[in-house]
Image (cartoon, rainbow, N blue to C red; front, side, top):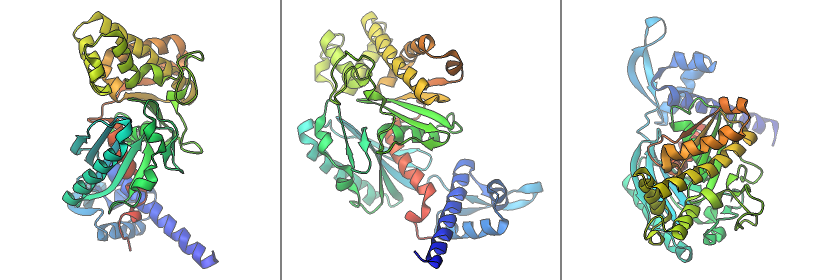
Length: 403
Protein backbone atom coordinates (compact mmCIF):
# COMPACT_ATOMS: atom_id res chain seq x y z
CA UNK A 1 0.00 0.00 0.00
CA UNK A 2 1.45 3.41 -0.97
CA UNK A 3 1.66 6.36 1.40
CA UNK A 4 -1.44 8.07 0.00
CA UNK A 5 -3.53 4.88 0.17
CA UNK A 6 -2.36 4.23 3.73
CA UNK A 7 -3.33 7.75 4.77
CA UNK A 8 -6.77 7.35 3.16
CA UNK A 9 -7.30 4.02 4.95
CA UNK A 10 -6.26 5.58 8.26
CA UNK A 11 -8.69 8.49 7.81
CA UNK A 12 -11.46 6.04 6.93
CA UNK A 13 -10.75 3.98 10.06
CA UNK A 14 -10.72 7.07 12.28
CA UNK A 15 -13.99 8.28 10.73
CA UNK A 16 -15.67 4.92 11.31
CA UNK A 17 -14.38 4.81 14.89
CA UNK A 18 -15.82 8.25 15.60
CA UNK A 19 -19.15 7.39 13.98
CA UNK A 20 -19.26 4.31 16.19
CA UNK A 21 -18.50 6.38 19.29
CA UNK A 22 -21.36 8.74 18.48
CA UNK A 23 -23.78 5.84 17.91
CA UNK A 24 -22.73 4.15 21.15
CA UNK A 25 -23.25 7.41 23.02
CA UNK A 26 -26.74 7.92 21.62
CA UNK A 27 -27.55 4.24 22.18
CA UNK A 28 -26.58 4.53 25.84
CA UNK A 29 -27.76 8.06 26.67
CA UNK A 30 -30.75 8.55 24.40
CA UNK A 31 -31.65 11.96 22.93
CA UNK A 32 -28.64 14.26 23.23
CA UNK A 33 -27.37 17.57 21.90
CA UNK A 34 -24.34 17.89 19.66
CA UNK A 35 -22.59 19.89 22.38
CA UNK A 36 -23.08 17.16 25.02
CA UNK A 37 -21.82 14.49 22.61
CA UNK A 38 -18.75 16.57 21.74
CA UNK A 39 -17.96 17.15 25.41
CA UNK A 40 -18.42 13.50 26.37
CA UNK A 41 -16.30 12.16 23.50
CA UNK A 42 -13.61 14.82 23.63
CA UNK A 43 -14.20 15.89 20.03
CA UNK A 44 -14.59 19.38 18.63
CA UNK A 45 -18.00 20.85 17.88
CA UNK A 46 -17.05 21.02 14.20
CA UNK A 47 -16.10 17.33 14.14
CA UNK A 48 -19.38 16.29 15.78
CA UNK A 49 -21.36 18.48 13.38
CA UNK A 50 -19.67 16.77 10.42
CA UNK A 51 -20.07 13.22 11.83
CA UNK A 52 -23.71 13.66 12.78
CA UNK A 53 -24.58 15.30 9.46
CA UNK A 54 -23.38 12.21 7.64
CA UNK A 55 -25.26 9.90 9.99
CA UNK A 56 -28.41 11.96 9.43
CA UNK A 57 -27.95 11.86 5.66
CA UNK A 58 -27.62 8.06 5.89
CA UNK A 59 -30.90 7.99 7.88
CA UNK A 60 -29.25 6.32 10.87
CA UNK A 61 -29.96 9.10 13.36
CA UNK A 62 -32.32 12.05 13.18
CA UNK A 63 -33.08 15.38 14.81
CA UNK A 64 -35.97 15.53 17.28
CA UNK A 65 -36.43 19.24 17.93
CA UNK A 66 -35.48 21.46 20.82
CA UNK A 67 -34.13 20.11 24.10
CA UNK A 68 -32.54 21.81 27.08
CA UNK A 69 -28.82 22.09 26.48
CA UNK A 70 -25.85 23.44 28.37
CA UNK A 71 -26.38 26.54 30.51
CA UNK A 72 -30.15 26.19 30.02
CA UNK A 73 -29.86 27.00 26.32
CA UNK A 74 -32.13 25.30 23.83
CA UNK A 75 -30.41 22.79 21.54
CA UNK A 76 -31.46 20.51 18.71
CA UNK A 77 -31.66 16.94 19.98
CA UNK A 78 -30.28 13.94 18.14
CA UNK A 79 -31.65 10.43 18.49
CA UNK A 80 -30.78 6.90 17.48
CA UNK A 81 -34.34 5.59 17.45
CA UNK A 82 -34.26 2.10 19.03
CA UNK A 83 -37.42 1.09 17.17
CA UNK A 84 -36.25 2.11 13.69
CA UNK A 85 -33.97 -0.86 13.11
CA UNK A 86 -34.81 -4.53 13.65
CA UNK A 87 -32.55 -7.55 13.99
CA UNK A 88 -33.24 -11.26 13.65
CA UNK A 89 -31.78 -13.53 16.32
CA UNK A 90 -31.50 -17.28 15.75
CA UNK A 91 -30.59 -19.62 18.59
CA UNK A 92 -29.37 -23.14 17.85
CA UNK A 93 -29.45 -25.48 20.87
CA UNK A 94 -29.16 -29.09 19.74
CA UNK A 95 -32.83 -30.08 19.56
CA UNK A 96 -34.19 -26.55 19.86
CA UNK A 97 -34.07 -23.69 17.36
CA UNK A 98 -35.64 -20.36 18.28
CA UNK A 99 -36.01 -17.35 15.98
CA UNK A 100 -36.91 -13.86 17.14
CA UNK A 101 -37.06 -10.30 15.84
CA UNK A 102 -35.85 -7.54 18.15
CA UNK A 103 -35.19 -3.82 18.05
CA UNK A 104 -31.97 -2.08 19.11
CA UNK A 105 -32.87 -2.33 22.79
CA UNK A 106 -33.94 -5.97 22.67
CA UNK A 107 -37.68 -5.37 22.61
CA UNK A 108 -39.32 -8.41 21.03
CA UNK A 109 -41.42 -8.13 17.87
CA UNK A 110 -41.85 -11.88 17.41
CA UNK A 111 -40.48 -15.10 18.87
CA UNK A 112 -40.94 -18.56 17.38
CA UNK A 113 -39.85 -22.03 18.46
CA UNK A 114 -39.30 -24.33 15.50
CA UNK A 115 -40.37 -27.99 15.72
CA UNK A 116 -37.90 -30.07 17.80
CA UNK A 117 -34.80 -31.00 15.80
CA UNK A 118 -34.02 -34.67 15.29
CA UNK A 119 -30.44 -35.78 14.73
CA UNK A 120 -31.23 -37.42 11.38
CA UNK A 121 -33.42 -34.57 10.11
CA UNK A 122 -31.18 -31.51 10.49
CA UNK A 123 -31.50 -30.66 6.75
CA UNK A 124 -35.27 -30.31 7.24
CA UNK A 125 -34.67 -27.87 10.09
CA UNK A 126 -32.24 -25.85 7.96
CA UNK A 127 -34.84 -25.61 5.20
CA UNK A 128 -37.42 -24.31 7.71
CA UNK A 129 -34.91 -21.76 9.02
CA UNK A 130 -34.30 -20.43 5.52
CA UNK A 131 -38.03 -20.20 4.84
CA UNK A 132 -38.75 -18.51 8.18
CA UNK A 133 -36.00 -15.92 7.80
CA UNK A 134 -37.00 -15.17 4.20
CA UNK A 135 -40.60 -14.57 5.30
CA UNK A 136 -39.50 -12.30 8.15
CA UNK A 137 -37.32 -10.26 5.79
CA UNK A 138 -40.11 -9.97 3.22
CA UNK A 139 -42.56 -8.75 5.87
CA UNK A 140 -40.25 -6.31 7.69
CA UNK A 141 -38.03 -4.01 5.63
CA UNK A 142 -36.62 -2.47 8.82
CA UNK A 143 -34.59 -5.65 9.51
CA UNK A 144 -30.94 -4.74 8.89
CA UNK A 145 -29.00 -7.79 10.11
CA UNK A 146 -29.19 -11.37 11.40
CA UNK A 147 -27.30 -12.78 14.36
CA UNK A 148 -26.93 -16.50 15.07
CA UNK A 149 -26.00 -18.08 18.39
CA UNK A 150 -24.62 -21.60 17.98
CA UNK A 151 -23.41 -24.25 20.43
CA UNK A 152 -19.77 -24.22 21.48
CA UNK A 153 -16.99 -25.00 21.10
CA UNK A 154 -17.61 -23.07 17.89
CA UNK A 155 -14.57 -22.87 15.62
CA UNK A 156 -15.28 -19.45 14.16
CA UNK A 157 -12.70 -19.59 11.37
CA UNK A 158 -14.05 -22.94 10.16
CA UNK A 159 -17.73 -22.26 10.75
CA UNK A 160 -18.56 -25.42 12.66
CA UNK A 161 -18.99 -26.69 16.21
CA UNK A 162 -16.26 -29.10 17.29
CA UNK A 163 -18.43 -31.12 19.70
CA UNK A 164 -22.20 -31.18 20.17
CA UNK A 165 -22.82 -33.58 23.02
CA UNK A 166 -25.84 -35.85 22.59
CA UNK A 167 -26.47 -34.64 19.04
CA UNK A 168 -23.45 -35.15 16.84
CA UNK A 169 -25.35 -34.47 13.61
CA UNK A 170 -24.62 -30.76 14.13
CA UNK A 171 -20.89 -31.47 14.21
CA UNK A 172 -20.65 -31.85 10.42
CA UNK A 173 -22.79 -28.79 9.74
CA UNK A 174 -21.02 -25.61 8.56
CA UNK A 175 -22.88 -22.45 9.54
CA UNK A 176 -20.74 -20.15 7.38
CA UNK A 177 -21.18 -22.20 4.22
CA UNK A 178 -24.92 -22.52 4.78
CA UNK A 179 -25.90 -19.00 5.81
CA UNK A 180 -23.29 -16.39 4.91
CA UNK A 181 -24.55 -14.44 1.92
CA UNK A 182 -27.87 -16.31 1.85
CA UNK A 183 -30.07 -13.28 2.56
CA UNK A 184 -30.34 -9.60 1.66
CA UNK A 185 -28.85 -8.52 5.01
CA UNK A 186 -25.52 -9.47 6.64
CA UNK A 187 -25.24 -12.41 9.05
CA UNK A 188 -23.03 -12.64 12.13
CA UNK A 189 -22.40 -15.93 13.94
CA UNK A 190 -21.26 -16.31 17.54
CA UNK A 191 -21.00 -19.03 20.18
CA UNK A 192 -24.23 -19.07 22.20
CA UNK A 193 -22.86 -18.17 25.64
CA UNK A 194 -20.80 -15.31 24.22
CA UNK A 195 -23.95 -14.06 22.51
CA UNK A 196 -25.68 -14.34 25.88
CA UNK A 197 -23.10 -12.21 27.68
CA UNK A 198 -23.40 -9.55 24.97
CA UNK A 199 -27.16 -9.48 25.58
CA UNK A 200 -26.62 -9.01 29.30
CA UNK A 201 -24.05 -6.30 28.70
CA UNK A 202 -26.06 -4.36 26.11
CA UNK A 203 -29.65 -4.90 27.22
CA UNK A 204 -29.82 -5.53 30.99
CA UNK A 205 -29.51 -2.22 32.88
CA UNK A 206 -28.23 -4.00 35.99
CA UNK A 207 -25.28 -5.41 34.01
CA UNK A 208 -24.65 -2.60 31.52
CA UNK A 209 -21.98 -0.88 33.62
CA UNK A 210 -20.28 -4.14 34.58
CA UNK A 211 -16.92 -4.42 32.81
CA UNK A 212 -16.19 -7.91 34.17
CA UNK A 213 -19.25 -10.02 33.49
CA UNK A 214 -19.91 -13.75 33.05
CA UNK A 215 -22.99 -15.32 31.50
CA UNK A 216 -23.36 -18.94 32.60
CA UNK A 217 -25.53 -20.70 30.01
CA UNK A 218 -27.43 -23.68 31.45
CA UNK A 219 -29.37 -25.07 28.52
CA UNK A 220 -29.21 -28.27 26.50
CA UNK A 221 -25.47 -27.76 26.86
CA UNK A 222 -23.50 -25.73 29.40
CA UNK A 223 -21.44 -22.77 28.27
CA UNK A 224 -19.84 -19.56 29.44
CA UNK A 225 -19.49 -16.11 27.92
CA UNK A 226 -17.11 -13.66 29.56
CA UNK A 227 -16.53 -9.94 29.21
CA UNK A 228 -13.20 -9.08 30.82
CA UNK A 229 -12.46 -5.38 31.35
CA UNK A 230 -15.04 -4.52 28.71
CA UNK A 231 -13.74 -6.98 26.11
CA UNK A 232 -15.27 -10.26 24.98
CA UNK A 233 -13.04 -13.26 25.71
CA UNK A 234 -12.67 -15.33 22.53
CA UNK A 235 -9.57 -17.53 22.40
CA UNK A 236 -7.45 -18.37 19.36
CA UNK A 237 -10.20 -20.34 17.58
CA UNK A 238 -13.20 -18.81 19.31
CA UNK A 239 -13.43 -21.67 21.80
CA UNK A 240 -12.40 -19.96 25.05
CA UNK A 241 -14.31 -20.46 28.32
CA UNK A 242 -15.85 -23.84 27.38
CA UNK A 243 -16.84 -24.52 30.96
CA UNK A 244 -19.26 -27.27 29.98
CA UNK A 245 -16.27 -29.46 29.17
CA UNK A 246 -14.33 -28.75 32.36
CA UNK A 247 -14.16 -31.98 34.33
CA UNK A 248 -15.67 -31.96 37.82
CA UNK A 249 -14.96 -35.70 38.23
CA UNK A 250 -11.89 -37.13 36.49
CA UNK A 251 -13.32 -40.64 36.90
CA UNK A 252 -16.87 -39.60 36.01
CA UNK A 253 -19.21 -40.16 33.10
CA UNK A 254 -17.61 -40.27 29.62
CA UNK A 255 -18.36 -37.27 27.42
CA UNK A 256 -18.56 -37.04 23.63
CA UNK A 257 -15.67 -34.56 23.75
CA UNK A 258 -13.29 -37.30 24.96
CA UNK A 259 -13.08 -36.07 28.55
CA UNK A 260 -14.71 -37.61 31.61
CA UNK A 261 -16.93 -36.01 34.22
CA UNK A 262 -17.65 -32.88 32.17
CA UNK A 263 -19.86 -30.35 33.96
CA UNK A 264 -22.61 -30.49 31.33
CA UNK A 265 -23.12 -34.20 32.04
CA UNK A 266 -24.50 -33.22 35.45
CA UNK A 267 -26.45 -29.96 35.13
CA UNK A 268 -27.51 -29.48 31.49
CA UNK A 269 -31.14 -29.89 30.42
CA UNK A 270 -30.11 -33.10 28.62
CA UNK A 271 -28.53 -34.51 31.78
CA UNK A 272 -31.55 -33.55 33.87
CA UNK A 273 -33.91 -35.17 31.39
CA UNK A 274 -31.84 -38.35 31.56
CA UNK A 275 -32.07 -38.37 35.37
CA UNK A 276 -35.82 -37.84 35.25
CA UNK A 277 -36.25 -40.78 32.90
CA UNK A 278 -34.07 -42.97 35.13
CA UNK A 279 -35.77 -42.03 38.40
CA UNK A 280 -39.39 -41.70 37.27
CA UNK A 281 -39.82 -38.48 39.28
CA UNK A 282 -41.75 -36.98 36.37
CA UNK A 283 -44.23 -39.45 34.86
CA UNK A 284 -43.94 -39.90 31.10
CA UNK A 285 -40.86 -37.66 30.94
CA UNK A 286 -39.37 -39.84 28.19
CA UNK A 287 -42.06 -38.48 25.85
CA UNK A 288 -41.16 -34.85 26.61
CA UNK A 289 -38.57 -32.53 25.09
CA UNK A 290 -35.61 -31.60 27.29
CA UNK A 291 -37.14 -28.21 27.97
CA UNK A 292 -40.55 -29.64 28.83
CA UNK A 293 -39.01 -32.19 31.20
CA UNK A 294 -37.07 -29.51 33.07
CA UNK A 295 -40.12 -27.27 33.35
CA UNK A 296 -42.12 -30.19 34.73
CA UNK A 297 -39.43 -30.86 37.33
CA UNK A 298 -39.29 -27.23 38.46
CA UNK A 299 -43.07 -26.99 38.66
CA UNK A 300 -43.30 -30.19 40.70
CA UNK A 301 -40.58 -28.93 43.06
CA UNK A 302 -42.42 -25.61 43.49
CA UNK A 303 -45.52 -27.58 44.48
CA UNK A 304 -43.62 -29.16 47.35
CA UNK A 305 -42.65 -32.59 46.00
CA UNK A 306 -39.70 -33.68 48.14
CA UNK A 307 -37.99 -35.83 45.49
CA UNK A 308 -38.22 -33.04 42.92
CA UNK A 309 -36.89 -30.51 45.42
CA UNK A 310 -33.97 -32.79 46.29
CA UNK A 311 -33.06 -33.17 42.61
CA UNK A 312 -33.24 -29.40 42.01
CA UNK A 313 -30.96 -28.91 45.00
CA UNK A 314 -28.49 -31.47 43.64
CA UNK A 315 -28.51 -29.84 40.21
CA UNK A 316 -27.98 -26.45 41.84
CA UNK A 317 -24.89 -27.73 43.62
CA UNK A 318 -23.43 -28.89 40.31
CA UNK A 319 -24.16 -25.43 38.94
CA UNK A 320 -22.25 -24.13 41.95
CA UNK A 321 -19.18 -26.22 41.09
CA UNK A 322 -19.16 -24.43 37.75
CA UNK A 323 -19.43 -21.09 39.54
CA UNK A 324 -16.33 -21.95 41.57
CA UNK A 325 -14.40 -22.47 38.33
CA UNK A 326 -15.71 -19.15 36.98
CA UNK A 327 -14.64 -17.34 40.17
CA UNK A 328 -11.15 -18.76 40.10
CA UNK A 329 -10.60 -18.47 36.34
CA UNK A 330 -12.14 -15.12 35.45
CA UNK A 331 -12.84 -13.23 38.71
CA UNK A 332 -15.96 -11.45 37.36
CA UNK A 333 -18.00 -8.83 39.18
CA UNK A 334 -21.23 -10.60 38.25
CA UNK A 335 -22.23 -14.10 37.18
CA UNK A 336 -25.61 -14.34 35.45
CA UNK A 337 -27.33 -17.73 35.22
CA UNK A 338 -29.56 -18.20 32.19
CA UNK A 339 -31.37 -20.58 29.82
CA UNK A 340 -33.55 -23.61 30.57
CA UNK A 341 -31.98 -24.83 33.81
CA UNK A 342 -31.85 -21.34 35.33
CA UNK A 343 -35.65 -21.47 35.35
CA UNK A 344 -35.18 -23.61 38.47
CA UNK A 345 -35.18 -20.18 40.09
CA UNK A 346 -34.27 -19.24 43.63
CA UNK A 347 -33.94 -22.81 45.00
CA UNK A 348 -31.41 -23.64 42.30
CA UNK A 349 -29.55 -20.34 42.88
CA UNK A 350 -29.49 -20.94 46.65
CA UNK A 351 -27.97 -24.42 46.16
CA UNK A 352 -25.31 -22.98 43.86
CA UNK A 353 -24.55 -20.31 46.44
CA UNK A 354 -24.06 -23.00 49.10
CA UNK A 355 -21.19 -24.47 47.09
CA UNK A 356 -19.68 -21.05 46.38
CA UNK A 357 -19.81 -20.14 50.07
CA UNK A 358 -18.06 -23.42 50.92
CA UNK A 359 -15.35 -23.32 48.26
CA UNK A 360 -14.55 -19.81 47.04
CA UNK A 361 -11.95 -17.47 48.56
CA UNK A 362 -13.97 -15.12 50.81
CA UNK A 363 -12.60 -11.92 49.28
CA UNK A 364 -13.65 -13.04 45.80
CA UNK A 365 -17.00 -14.30 47.02
CA UNK A 366 -17.89 -11.05 48.74
CA UNK A 367 -17.02 -8.99 45.67
CA UNK A 368 -19.11 -11.00 43.20
CA UNK A 369 -22.86 -11.12 42.56
CA UNK A 370 -24.56 -14.28 41.31
CA UNK A 371 -28.04 -13.77 39.89
CA UNK A 372 -30.63 -15.11 37.47
CA UNK A 373 -31.04 -13.53 34.05
CA UNK A 374 -33.65 -10.77 33.99
CA UNK A 375 -33.96 -10.52 30.23
CA UNK A 376 -37.53 -10.93 28.92
CA UNK A 377 -36.58 -13.80 26.60
CA UNK A 378 -33.83 -16.39 26.48
CA UNK A 379 -30.47 -14.59 26.59
CA UNK A 380 -29.01 -16.64 23.75
CA UNK A 381 -31.72 -15.74 21.22
CA UNK A 382 -31.69 -12.07 22.28
CA UNK A 383 -27.91 -12.42 22.36
CA UNK A 384 -27.89 -13.59 18.76
CA UNK A 385 -29.59 -10.31 17.87
CA UNK A 386 -27.18 -8.48 20.20
CA UNK A 387 -24.26 -9.84 18.17
CA UNK A 388 -25.74 -8.11 15.12
CA UNK A 389 -26.57 -4.96 17.11
CA UNK A 390 -22.94 -4.78 18.26
CA UNK A 391 -21.73 -4.93 14.67
CA UNK A 392 -24.26 -2.24 13.71
CA UNK A 393 -23.00 0.10 16.42
CA UNK A 394 -19.32 -0.57 15.78
CA UNK A 395 -19.31 -0.65 11.96
CA UNK A 396 -22.24 1.41 10.63
CA UNK A 397 -20.72 1.70 7.16
CA UNK A 398 -21.21 -2.06 6.69
CA UNK A 399 -24.93 -1.44 6.77
CA UNK A 400 -25.39 1.97 5.17
CA UNK A 401 -23.66 4.11 2.56
CA UNK A 402 -22.12 6.99 4.50
CA UNK A 403 -20.64 9.66 2.28
